[in-house]
Image (cartoon, rainbow, N blue to C red; front, side):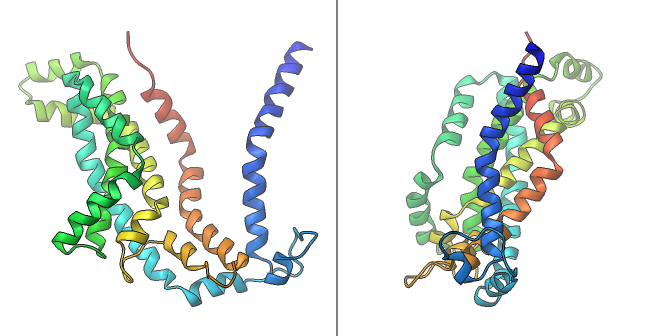
Length: 272
């Protein structure tokens, strides 16, 4: 009886925590398939009758959605790849050097709102003529991707036994070779998790694209912003644009959920 009550309490708690997010997501899907008359009806209409694809067509017709998608791929891909190239060795160096102060600095950088970097970066790019370019957006997204990757990799490399690297050095391996052939393969789950989380946070970033992006360099979240008008809020196109922006992140999260959970769990284990 006690076991049954615990199980019921667990599932009830999960339902209470998850149901608001699920209901909001379902309501967004409903909005995206309804016409504006049904979207503003009272009492609210939940099931579209009949469903329409007009909102999705309007998103592509009224916005340069394909260009924004390509820009998002370039910016997020460049920021994640550069973040991995910089963050993985940095995490290894901090972990092996036991540089606690640097680790705290990385944590502070991770916790600092991205908006705090906006003004100095804008002034820097204005002086260098990079405002409105893909390059500027990639650089700004590094303040999102690098701290995430470094922080995750510190935990992973701390769990790699240093005796394995010492054995490789005895056999004649250099520090780089010990990192490349011993530590890095053992920490590959962390690289995967760091890359996935960096992708999610970078893809969803909105403010950098709106302020630093130009007409031809804005990223996909700007499509949601473009659905807003001063006259009225078009709920159907707005919901459709938001779902299209969320879809890549949703697919990555669903397909890689096991790797994310396993990777975060493994990286959280500390020896001794």
